Image (cartoon, rainbow, N blue to C red):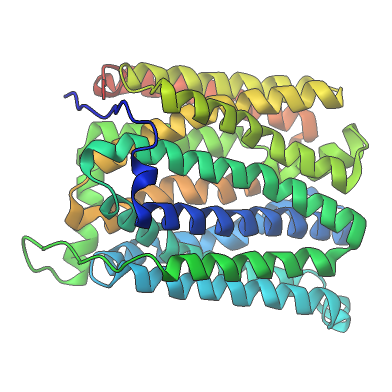
Length: 413
C-alpha cells in the first residue's frame, strides 16, 4: 500500500499553531529529560564507579514504564489527552525538584541510603513517562491533517534531536563548571516552561469509539491490532532489539573516564554526538523524505547503526569516536522517522493511545532495558567486548527481520 505523504511545502505542519506549541513544549521537555539523564548518570558513577549501578538507572525507569504502559494507553483513548500530558509533566517537574533537594540539601539521605533515593525518584519518573508517551503520540496525530503526518514526524524528530544534542552538552557543561545544584535547577526551569507551552495547546475532542469495551477488552484489542499487523510489528520489533542490544549510552561515563579521559564536559559531547548526526539527517529528510522505499531504507539504516556501534567500541580516539557516534545518530534518525510515520498512518484514531503504549513498551522501554543490558554485559564481558557483542546482535536482528517480514521489505509510503 502506498500513501502520498510528501508535501512540497516543507514547513506545512509548522504553520499550524497548535502543532508549533506542541513541538516547542516537547523540545523543552526533552531538553530537561536529556539533561537530567546525563546528570543522574554522572552522579551515580561518581558515587559508585560501577557499570552495573549505571545500568540500574535504566531498569528503575523501565520497570514502572512497562508495568503501566498498556493501562496508560487505554486511559489515553478514554481521557482528555491534554490533561494527561499536563499531569505527567507536572509529576516530572516534582521529581526534578526532589533530585535537586536530595543532591544539595539532604546529603545525610545519600550518606545513609546510598543511591537508593535517586533510584526511587527515577522509578516515579518512569511512571510519569508511561502515561505521557501514549498521550503525546495520540494528541500529535490530532494536530495535523493526515497528508502532513510525514512532514510532522520529521519536524518532531528535528525538535527532539536538537534537544537531545543540547541537553547532554548543557547538562555536562553546567555540572562540570557550576556543580550539581545549578544543573538540576536548570532542569526544573525547563520542565516548568514546557508545562506552560503544553497548557496553551488547544484541547482536542476524543475520537468516537466504534464499540464499548471494558478495560480488559480494550487492552486486548490494542495488543491484537499490533501483533496482527506485520508492518507495525516488524518495524517496532526491529527498533526494539536494535536499541536493546546496540545502545551504549549507559556506559558512556565509563568510556569518558577510563578510555578517553575526558571528564563530565567530554561526556556531554559524547552524549550529544548521535543527536548532532540525527539533526543533520532530519534536515536532509525534510527535503528528501525516505518514504519511497521506506522498508528497505529502514533495514539498511538499522544495519548501519549496528556497524557504527562496533566501530565505536574499537575507537580509542576522542574525535573519531564523536564522528562514529554522529553516524549512528544519522542512521537511527531515518529509522525513527519511518517508524513513527508508519505508526501514524496505519493506526485508527480511536486506538492511537493503546497502539502507542505497545510501541512504547517495545521502543521506549528498550532504551532503559538496553541501558541495563549494557551495564550487565560490561560487568560480565568487559567494556569493549560488550559493545561489540551488542552491535553484532543488532546486525543479526536486521537479518532476521528482513527474512521474516516481506511486507516490511517491500513497504513504500
